[in-house]
Amino acid sequence: MILFSWHTFWPAVSAILYAMNMLIALYASVSMILRKQDPVKTLSWTAVMVLLPYLGIILYLTFGQNYRKKKMFSRKGLADLKTRQEICADEKDALDSFPEFLSGDMAQYRKLIYQNLRNSYSLIDFNNEIEFFFDGKSALDSMYDAMLRAEHHIHLQTYILEDDRIGNKFISLLMEKAKSGVEVRLMYDDVGSGGIGKSLRKQMRAAGIEVLVFSPVHFFMPMSKINYRNHRKVLVVDGETGYLGGVNIADRYYYGTEAGPWRDTQIKVKGESVFSLQASFLLDRYFVLNHRLHNSRKYYPDIKIGKKVLQGRDILSQIISSGPDSDWAGIMQCFFTAITCAQSRIYIVTPYFTPNATILNAVKVAALGNIDVRLMIPQRGDSRMAHYGTRSYITELLEAGVKIYLFKEGFNHSKVISVDGNMAIIGSANMDQRSFEHNFEVMSVLYDKGCSAKVEKQFVEDLALCEKVELESWKKRGVGQKISESFFRLLSPLI
Image (cartoon, rainbow, N blue to C red):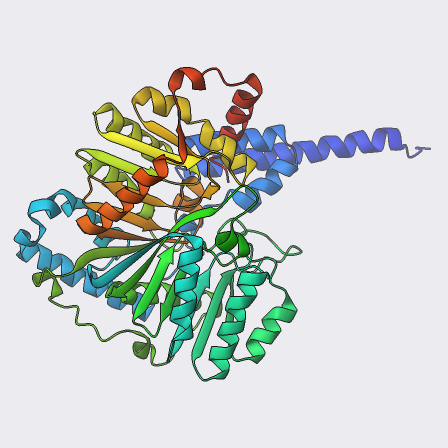
């Protein structure tokens, strides 16, 4: 007679489960190798799955998938995208026919303009006006005023919408405008805006707002897309005025935090870039609802795009949208080409600096090549992982000749690059792997000396609020900090 024994049962079950874990880890690792994934990521995920049994598998299934390659956010076949592709092809032909358009100062960015046309279908836009805001308060005030004067429609997209004073102020205005007959569409990310509950959504919808929750997370269902968030911040009013940048809708963006004021960068656009921002918003709406707006043409300004490249007027720009829905990491490639095009100086402001090898090498090579590369990051981060992950790169950047400044007065959330005083890139994307690979992001590339001058002027003013990092003193930081930097840098390629 065989007696059941817990002493032998649980060790056997444990051994079977561990063997299954190893088999799954092996299968996942081989799959990543066959997909020709980044070897650093492959090795990192393999280590996580082996060293953290069971939990590592869950983390990989949740955060380790590459949906750009799997096309799970596919946008192929959309009529709006097809039209955009055709326009980009026409603009490329026009540039080929009239090479003198990209002469003088613009010749430096010829490759970048062509690249953005092809990898992101970024139209060549001419704008009448670009207004800059270098703090959250002024940006939110301007956005509120623009919505207050809306007559036809408001399309507002944000990563973070809080149920707080500023959030409720904006929501109240949106409900008032919807009740007055203005078409109001509000889109927010489910993870970034997790504090918006069912009751508040119900109130907004009852007022006539089309509330769009991007990629809802259901914790009792497969979490395969939790790592792919919509980080864009876009406002379009009446198809004539657009906003984009780093500003979310929450109290800390307006009033600051206990650490001090909140610094950020946002731009207001009047001109053809509104067309591109509108297209970005409506494409994201399609992902949420899986259907297009009827008569969507009425949401676009009356713009003649065909041969505008011949006119050479106003402020030239391109709006770049990139994310798991795109075939290429367009924003990352844009950063790379802009950095490698530099001839004299590069100013970078980012709250999080955990780049991939491509961008890291581009920055270091530029500095080694005697380009004046300056990087401004916060002295105090709002995330332990981002804080130490960012600092793990400081030593090698300093050794390459990059000048690094720690912003001390509050938190600097700006996402800005200026190159040679001739062009600037502004938008929602941080200089980290999450923005490059996982998030839906949007940036504006401004090929204009006036815009770049404003960005550089603000950068120089902010230097007075920074501490410059010196290599010798940096090397003397504590052992605990160095260990934390190494640990969090190991995790940065994963999530």
